[in-house]
Image 1 (cartoon, protein in one colour):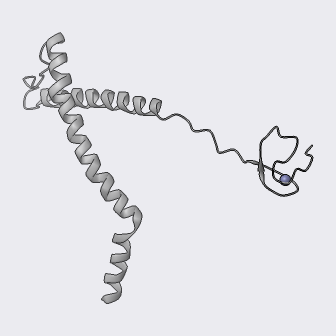
Image 2 (cartoon, rainbow, N blue to C red):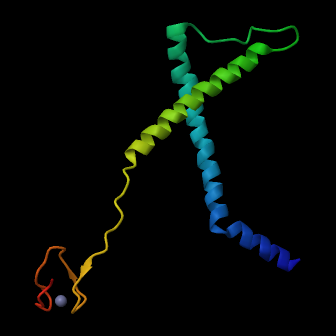
Image 3 (tube, rainbow, N blue to C red):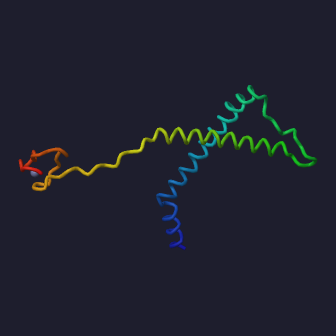
Length: 127
Ligand SMILES: [Zn+2]
């Protein structure tokens, strides 16, 4: 039993589990922001332009088709918003140039300028 608890502790304390937990919490908080943006900002704007997009009154006999359409429309709005956010974030993330290996003097192994003709450390003539 003690071994099981130890194993569980190791599992729960693994970095990626903690990272995942943080991701879930932040994802939940972020989801609330996205929901608020859609419900409080975007839906009223769309409503102002196209009229309130409420399909919940549409029914097909006992089938609440309108609620389903509302859910689909909400999903599409959220998907488009997230797409725009991800696109903006990707644009901000500039591709970093890979770290260049510094040129080394073949005689003293000191770091030197790429176009140096003489080593500033050991004064050796460089090719
Ligand atoms: Zn040198």
